[in-house]
Image 1 (cartoon, rainbow, N blue to C red):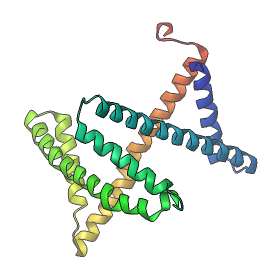
Image 2 (image 1 turned 120 degrees about the vertical axis):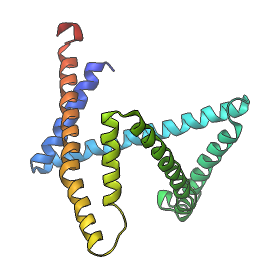
Image 3 (image 1 turned 30 degrees about the horizontal axis):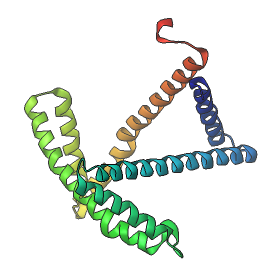
Image 4 (image 1 turned 90 degrees about the vertical axis):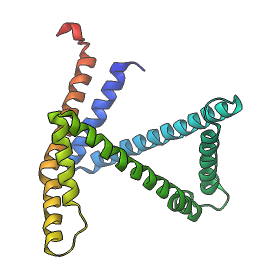
Length: 205
């Protein structure tokens, strides 16, 4: 499939979803629902392909005795355990109790450990940023420290005030910046798609 066709499909799907969001119409809603279901199926297929590719690479590394054999064994064991728990006879898929136990007993603690290590490395990066004297880095560290203070688990009137300030910060300045980024990305995507459809290249500017 050529790039202009892909860009045209992206633009058409985006316009239909936006129209369904802005206009109340039953037929349009059904079309948008079908498109969303199709996108979910494509994403699920891509995820399955990614898992299969990862298992194939790790299995090949293990067979050819290259890379990290312990890591390859752990990856393959984890993939196999989740597949067996969710696809065994009588299982309920993602809602099965064995799958929930694997997620709660293994994945959540592993993710918490990784985030704990990330916190330590973030502190080290913040120290280096402050030592460099870069204005953007100092501003970023100051914003992070302000967010940390607002999210402190304090009780009483101080905790209430900090919670209200954190909610306002999230909804107003952070929300405005995030919405601005989304609008900017959407505009750039539409411009890129239009340039591709019209055959306008960088040399035509």
